Amino acid sequence: MGRGKIVIRRIDNSTSRQVTFSKRRNGLLKKAKELAILCDAEVGLIIFSSTGKLYEFSNTSMKSVIERYNKSKDERQQLNNPLSELKLWQREAEILRQQLQDLQENHRRLMGEELCGLGVKELTNLENQLEMSLRGIRMKKEQILKDEIQELTRKGNMIHQENLELYKKVNLIRQENAGLYKKAYGTRDTNAVNGTTNYPYRFTVSREVHAPIHLQLSQPEPQNFGMSAGASDSR
Image (cartoon, rainbow, N blue to C red; front, side, top):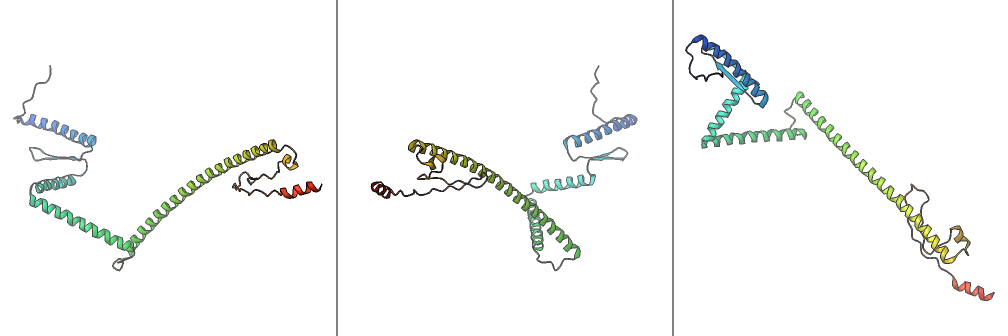
């Protein structure tokens, strides 16, 4: 059989009341601890027994929990009152104004201004801040330079591969031009047979594979047909 439903009312028997208090107190503390761990909540629990004995639990600090509770309670009350809400925003504005002044003063000191009121300790702290900032700036600068060098190296390798491809294409064009010249003129010219014939248009290509390729288009060489004809007539 299941347990019967317990009527929630004050237990008259003092012994039973004390036993029940002890058991339920421990269960309540256990549940509060589990809630704080499982849900990442800030929990504060305060228990006073009928004899005036204090039992408490807090996963952070009971003082901070109470201060947070009082602050939250005051804020709720102020939000319900328009005048209090105005004062709240005025106080927030004053806090932000003070923070802005502190930041401006710190910025001026970092720039080397308004240092007359600082002692040796304050100046040493300021110097350490500047050194840390300078170290971070240098590290960032070196990283940017390394990235740029890697990018330039990659582009240089791509350009080198393109030069090699162009060199192969130029050699292929030279071979095709040599074949076309042989088909057109035969082997009458010894220079043509040796592959050193001066074509009307030619490419000048560096012989080094890894050297930069320079393409140059030469002008057609003049053919002195008149002198050749006169020489044949004289013969």
